[in-house]
Amino acid sequence: MTDSSNQLPPTGALAASWPRRWLKWALLVVIFGAGVAVGAAGSVLLIRQRIASVLRQPEQIPDRVVPILRHRLSLTDEQTEQVAAIVRRRYTALEEVRSEFTPRVATELRLLRTEVDAVLTSDQKDRWAIWCQRVEEHLPSTPAQKPD
Image (cartoon, rainbow, N blue to C red; front, side, top):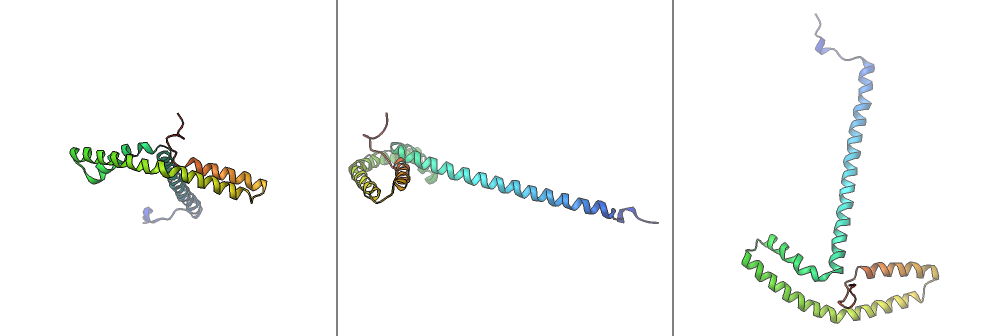
């Protein structure tokens, strides 16, 4: 009397199922890895976009900071109002400081661009101009420089 549950499948069938199992696991790992890569790249792009947005529109900083502080510090409604007033007041003072130094920074960057440009070949000048333009796009603008 033989027990059919202890019988092994034919060798050919067993051998054929192993590559399929391996392929399924390999495909699963590849799909998971692709998901991780896409998620990480998306996160980096989102963070860069948000930082660039804040740098281009610094007047939005108080409106963005207060909700973050409210959540992280568990502020009451009264505290939130007080903190919002403080942030707006200090932001105004910081903007005054920034408006004083931004023209000087712009002058120094213009001098840097001109002086480096003088030692470059024409091909290098083109690449330097593109690089400078990208850097300038990420710099905060003064109220006079902001587009309407």
